[in-house]
Length: 485
Ligand SMILES: Nc1ncnc2c1ncn2[C@@H]1O[C@H](COP(=O)(O)OP(=O)(O)OP(=O)(O)O)[C@@H](O)[C@H]1O
Ligand SMILES: [Mg+2]
Image 1 (cartoon, protein in one colour):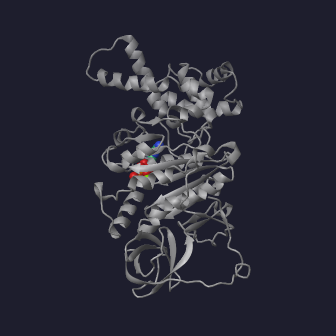
Image 2 (image 1 turned 135 degrees about the horizontal axis):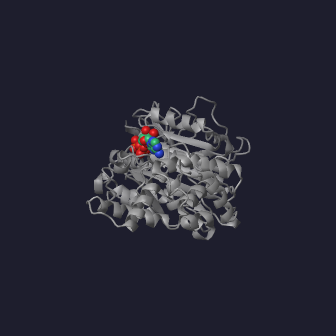
Image 3 (image 1 turned 60 degrees about the vertical axis):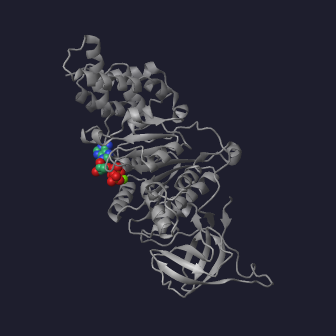
């Protein structure tokens, strides 16, 4: 659906004719929902206006009654008030004036600055690009995370789920991915649904402190916002990204998180008396998230070649990935990054469970040099975890196994990474080669990990590029590693 230009001036829009209009009446109000009668031609997703100048979104059609979500926190809508058709669908302002801003799902500012000026608007709901307009995922989207970029790579246009219990580092991983886009010409959207104000402020602050706010839009529906706002936020963020994708730009959208989004939708549906299904979610909950995530895509060159990469986040309870919403999302996305609370408690940060994480298409988009250098690492690491489990039983391992265990422990230490410290592709290649070629084998794991910053500095100084010959890389890396003390 194309962007709509700003409405024409009243004079040019003037037309003679007769118009019949329906006039409805509010019969009930509460929890951000208005029940209206007397608008028999209302359609789903249409806007209706109330006498106090506030608007509502038609969400439920009954025989005589319609249920509408109120689109303003402070409305004076009361029972008995008149309601009329506005004759439009819900749209949000899009465009570059949003960059660096914190807005609500309707584009209103929440950062205390002037309202962004919009010249174009886009419908919150839109058809996903059809297959004929799409291209294959072929370009990498760096997240800056060692484990993700080497073992679970993400490509532009991919939908990669971040899943894990609460407090396992899901939001941190997504934030790092946004910060990594600095200087990479990817516009970012952070959709924050149902977070407390302190967490929102911390996210915005981190973006600002790392120079990431200037290419990012933060779309916020707070925890105490009306359920309608929390329900709309991901669609608003998606529409904003879609505008740039259609203009040929690359975009990254983080949905933090879709568990709370699903809960808001459940809340709305129950308030509107829709029949509850499994876990009291309405029957169309799968469709809710599939129609949102289907809009992530890489467009073909004829369509401008833009892309939208989606990083939806889902929270699990006690690692239960077979619950209703997690299984839905796993089946919709192109892979998942699974964060484990046991690993987190054990100090393995980021707490990514490599065995349970997968990227189904990102490998095709990985840089060839990184792909070659990381080819064996996943398998080696998983084998090491198995071996380590057996080694606990006290049997004395033979020297070959001993060597494998030592290298595994080294790898585990190298995979650890602080938050807000994203790596460049150059740095990725540096540690992968140094580990793969055994340059770090003579060091104790912690010592080897402490060497990495020096390696990264040296390859940056030497202006090594991933496509440079491997021998040249190894020469510089050997020299930087030196000998153990
Ligand atoms: N790589 C890391 N290194 C050090 N600390 C980290 C790392 N990743 C996350 N943390 C810390 O772990 C805590 C939880 O992280 P975060 O808020 O990202 O988790 P979450 O899964 O999004 O939590 P929630 O479920 O509450 O949204 C934070 O205090 C964060 O600073
Ligand atoms: Mg979080």
